[in-house]
Length: 255
Image (tube, rainbow, N blue to C red; front, side, top):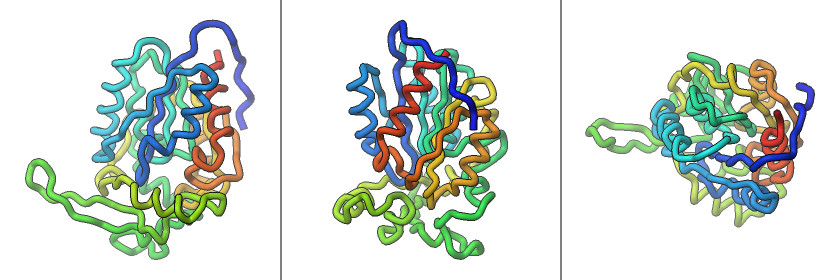
């Protein structure tokens, strides 16, 4: 585990930009946003298209250029892959914060990182053409070709994302409101990672059934991230918003 960074208390607070992952949306950050606002941080929650890693990263990269001053860039799950690419070359991004997220190296895909260590519940048949916790829904793309959207099956939503602290009606609502990710996005290779040049922080969710905790620890150590571990499921911003907020603010206050 990395040692805590030095902190400073003077000067204006940086803007915190939150990037959600697959099968959720920006509202997944609600409880963190309220805490950051209470503590005086300006916050933006980017609406991720979830169409492809390179295009999603380009979208967030352009979004970041509209923000003046220092930025703390935070990604959850697939959003971690996006910030790894979107922050590259942006000198305003002062820290990357990974919340139970992918932090890929060049050439790696989300699918490869999920399968690197045991523990994911995304499939119980490694030979299945589509992970068994997902539904594949074809759609027509703008150029007329067929794409594939992946949805998390409702009866797998709690196990993959949440725990018993979340009520059945809330789980059902979150499942119904989920935004799909394309199969292309989870299988697209990452570019040169921004975590090689930008300081990073990482929250490992010990009870994660989407990205195995072992994979999260591996990525955090490789990125030399300041790391904390929390007994929490994958959507830790919903179940443990205080821990997420604390790590983001630690990154914001670090020199």
